[in-house]
Image (cartoon, rainbow, N blue to C red):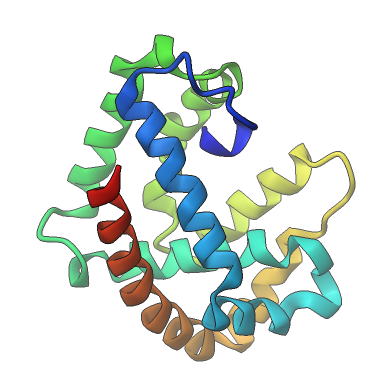
Length: 173
């Protein structure tokens, strides 16, 4: 939801949502400048140009979901259900785009589907279909398969640092 809220157009949201939007923006800025993340995007840039960052975000989501038990005591299934329920409980606070996406997100269980390469491929195809210009992101799964161990090693290194960054940032909010 935070990606669709520009400028200071989050002032009307409850304070916890405002903090979430601010944290999301800070993580995006940290991520985009991070050398490990940039190394991952460079591998894709020749074929996917400015979509490389979006694709790497999805690849990293895959590695997070796949290796969830390394990062949380809560199962991914339990976390996902609590997350979906939180969206339903706070439906009136969601922006219109997120409200429209919610039924698809939950029915197709996107977050759980991130665990598999096939799930990521389906999500990238759906994202392709929503783009105004043909992004061909769906084809990037070929690079994910080819450089799987490299992307996973980069994710692992990056995730430790972004987790520390996010924890520090949360203390300031």
